[in-house]
Image (cartoon, rainbow, N blue to C red; front, side):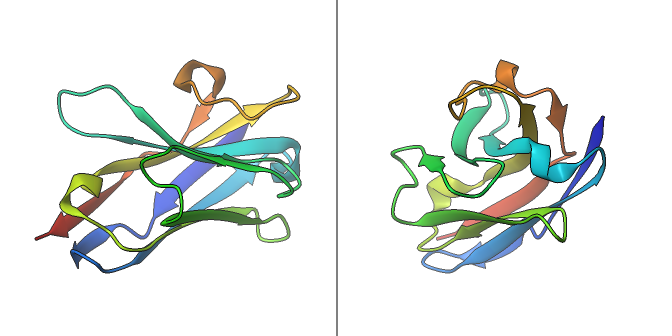
Length: 125
C-alpha cells in the first residue's frame, strides 16, 4: 500500500496563500488518483479536489474553484494543493488521500483507501 504524509499547513492572513504537499512512499504513486479533503472539528470531512494519476484531469469543489489548484509530480511522488485568496472559512485540517482504480475522480471519502495524517490550516481575518 501507499503511505502518505501531509505538510505545509500553518497560519496565514485572509487573502494570503499556502501550498500543501503530500509525499507518498510505498507502492507506485503514479498508479493513484489523489484527492484533498478538509475537516473542521465536529463536522464531516469535505471534498476539496482531486487529480488523476496522470495529472491530466482535475476536479474541484465549488467552494474552492478558481482559488485552489492541485498538481502532482510523479517523479517526486508528491501531490500539491496551492491555495490562494484564503478566507477564514478555509480554516480546517487538510488531508490528502489516494484512490486506486476507476474511470472518474471520486469526491466521496469512502472511495479513498489511503490517507495522510492531516495538516492544520488556519486563516485569520
